[in-house]
Image (tube, rainbow, N blue to C red; front, top):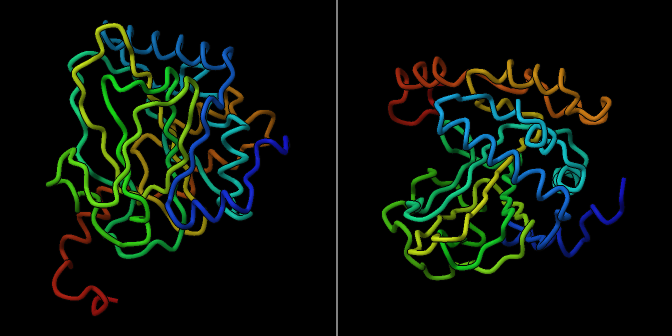
Length: 263
């Protein structure tokens, strides 16, 4: 492993306190361009109505096991194995709507933070104050709350929140998935595209709600060699997930009073 891919103790302490870490310009120009090209292909396919699994785009699929990302996530997981949860990708331009304050920690119901889940936000063209600023509320990963607990504030600055609107191309942010954040809409975008990808990873030891086609996604990842010769095969372990819908329906039937009495 490249020692440059690993986190310092200061990094680990900062993540524990604030819930996120910035790495400006992490991706080199070659990787950045290959990823942009794949996002362009994907957006063109969607425009034509040809919806393909994101993992079928080779560079985007390989990104889920990109060593300079995975080695840093591994440090945050403190030696525990972890699994890839999802990848989303698109570019955003003029007229892009914002996303109100929320967090993305997958748990039903929200009751604890016993196991780590992280999202990796990737800005292939950086941020320049157009299209959408990133707002983050440091430390909110330490509080257990529903994902929409701050949603009524939409895109407002809040006491203690921070706004990021100036990032170099190829920058990434590793965020504890329980950190409240939002994307504030901006009036620009006439010439600037906000290329945005996020990947997510879950610490083993607790089952996580996954997508209905997670088995198909992971099979494709292994078939395409995204595990990089088996080194990162642990990322595509379907046994770490449960099917959400039937279990949520089961919970709804018993969700009365204090759930501890249902044990």
